[in-house]
Length: 100
Image (cartoon, rainbow, N blue to C red; front, side, top):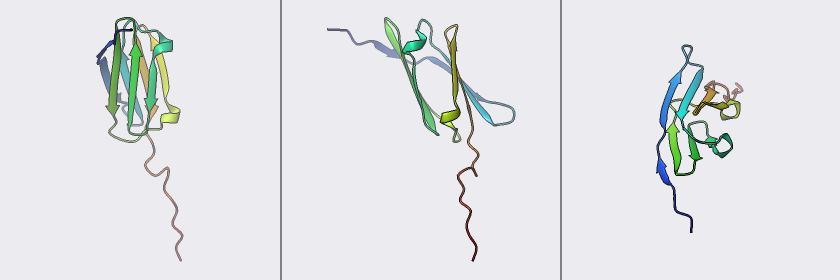
């Protein structure tokens, strides 16, 4: 029977660009293979799991403002997962009201 891995929280830094149009999330996950990283994102949050031999890095983060998850770009290099995702325009889904 395989022993359950210890789940630990990775070191995370999330910040907004100067124009407040892009959210960047940086996650340090040493020793993890890129193909083992699983990231799921909604407009208001994301979750990540990244197992390696002895442990599994897991985290969930809620966002301050809605983002466009379909436009997210993620890169993993030198033990750093970097995710950039633009904020959603709050009027993007607005419905034009017909005036009678």
